[in-house]
Image (cartoon, rainbow, N blue to C red; front, side, top):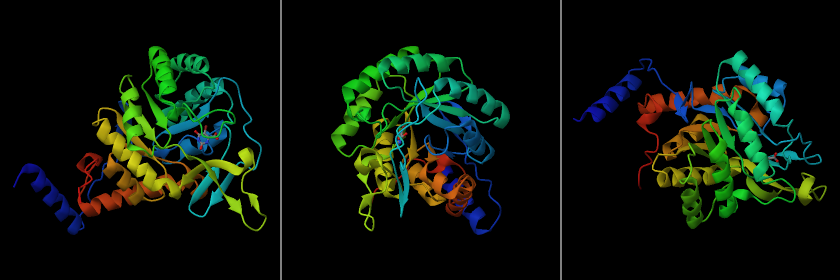
Length: 331
Ligand code: RRO
């Protein structure tokens, strides 16, 4: 029996015998060590320092902050978020306190919680992005997630679908960024588009992609009032949560294959349980973020997903993520 098979057999026996297996859920993103592979997504309840401290206190293995712009923004008119049966719809419109606030918050959060802090940059123009990337070079953040386009900023297209603009933006920010950075991507649906955007991303020192942002421009209606559930854009907003899980899995898988594991993939979209997380890792994710489920279930969700993931791995005889990450089997 080859070594790895023998190892798998030992692990299974450990699990069967009920002996307590030590499960290692740690990962590295862009060279930064995370205690576990489960942390919060940028967006839900991460605008103010008070909100970020709740994430800091939780078992989220990192603190990801709200996407920021050069100037503070109040965002779109309310109601701009609604829970749905299996997920959410939002058109927040990038409400945030402006990048200078997040540079300050990062220092406080790092000191207080001793876990990696992730900034999310979402400038309204190329020039704004360059200014912010330069400023974050001298900050306490460990990693930057570049969010080149929200699905909800009124009058702005989803930039991830404009490959030439993505090329220009990545070129500009790569030249100034000294922190490890990745890109948050919208969902792609066409196989050719995966190849095109992967071709652009590979040209730059991008360390990871985060798949997926909410799926743009859904419409949720209240049949009793005969009105949309959210106010901006005639009710159109990004769909998150359970509805997105299978699109997330496909995006994670396709980018894992196209990047041949040289650029990491973070999965986000539809993670409510440890098995959801397991599936994303099996598809190739190096970490998973939790967005809608954090809003709906509260901070305990991180611990719950970590515990369930650990138990599921133990039952299968897996001790660490590399025992199964990306190893989706053919049918
Ligand atoms: O603030 C938002 O409306 C928002 C952003 Br920046 C994003 O990237 N994704 C999303 O669903 N909402």
